[in-house]
Length: 575
Image 1: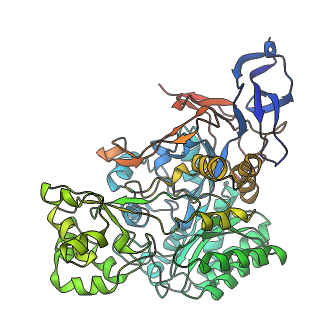
Image 2 (image 1 turned 30 degrees about the horizontal axis):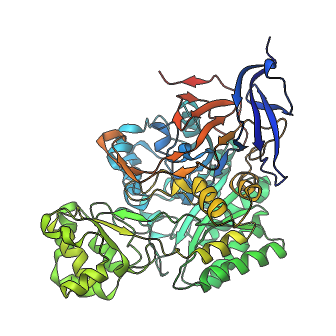
Image 3 (image 1 turned 180 degrees about the vertical axis):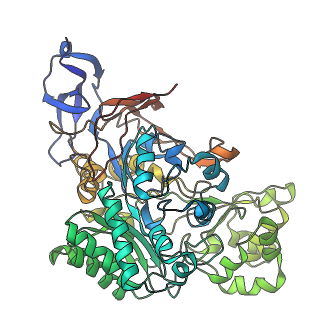
């Protein structure tokens, strides 16, 4: 009888713990690593030949919005295609539990703008066989998964449940009794397996309230009282358990930093700060943030920055674009039905205001946006022109070029906005900080215009192979062990005896991110924009092969990680 389920043989092992690479074998039994070294292949039921390949821990993605998608996509793609074996859901305070039955439609409507998830897909693809957060986790556990899922407790649903929708949206300070009930719900959710709590706090008074509700109003967490955050942090202190994720933009950077520190100090737990991003026109921003994060470490304050390390841009149309919301005039013009938006964008009375308030938070300068999908023969000559270049030739303001074309083409014109972090020297400065987390994939969100879930493959290809910023040993620590340790993924992120067998086996020289494509694979007849990977020979989740030669095997060995810990359950395979 074979001693092991499978052996990965003769690969170059990078263990995720920053130890030097070495040639060796890995034996797997019952979903965990049983031995590492030299292993007789006759002792295994299956042998995976890894000669000439890198063998490393599966990647850990701490910023996703797969709360809906996991119910119809067991691989949580794009993430599953790019070597990610564990994800955290419920980021930014957004989620679907607890939600009363009569509020389900409104909860889904919220996610159509703030995270740009298609309504039809949520309506058809989500089972809604829960009301409370513990019941939601039970539903996630029942659902076939090719990915490990770690759940944040999102705070927006708690606020709505306790305060009522209108009061939560108005930012009413909870009473002492209401604070006690919010904290009781957090305790209940964490008792059931939640890993901590999350919140977006992009305060309306700030300069960058770019992620709003479907009607353009702030999210409940944006306007929640500081005392509520303090009460929630105190829950983690009392439990001595969990961590926090928060995106905080108030317009006062010093105040924001002090508040991050206060949350970490009250709780004694890690606080993931989103987001460390370079803006090429203002590099002093990310440099100040990096200096502050360094000072937190030196003072023993557990604030960890999550860096935007991908240069995935945005390909979008005004049919569903929401990332100009940092400018109120643009938010007003891009909310409402398709007909209402078209009318507002065509309105000459609005144009001067839109010209005077060009958005820049998500995309960099608007004139640099490129016309990539003109729909009519009349506009085809402007293909691949920037709005600025086309405007010079037409004698028009860039805003008028964009909106005249969009309105003329029924809002179907495609534009491409490069991210504002394009300079390689600025990326190097972020990567050089050894404790900045990689990622911010936003997996499951912005499905029609963002493909940032490619970031692990992009890191290995661009940061390591092309530019040599860090070693493979360092890259795998940053992609796996560091996020796993910060977020409490028990035992994951490293290759060592006794660890869960979440493993990637890839061809370093042939690894690549594939071109952008549109696929019609969402429930409700919806489509999305994706980028696949090439070069992953095998991906194993809890010891089972979920990807072979870049193709899904239909093996669903992922687990819900309550408190960061999985438990053995029967392996499910696609019918």
